[in-house]
Length: 147
Image 1 (cartoon, one colour):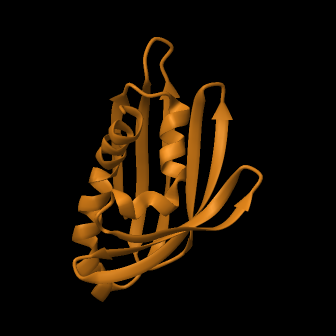
Image 2 (tube, rainbow, N blue to C red):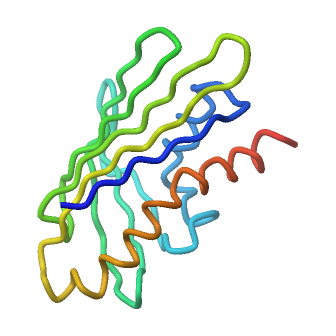
């Protein structure tokens, strides 16, 4: 199983960063590999969201159940696989608020692809995009909040 852990310190509050991650429908605007983002269902403390992505010439769709947990100004968004080409996929976004400035954003992601054929074509590209996700969201925050 592959695991990725990436983090960044940003000059934005935790809530702003969570808002960006929650705007699944806007992912195609700044994630070049995302062809469509959608919310399938909402519930009291979260939602089921999916996306259609194209990596290494392969298009796949998957969805995760995303549960939001808050502890003061700190926020966790827990993701668990609902559907898709993964044998396993889980992870979490953590948003830790600093009192004097901004927040720390961290993504932890664990996954394993179901198909060996798809795995060979898809895994290398997915590894690269997963590793760059935090940077992509930090760059998006700059565009959205530094106007």
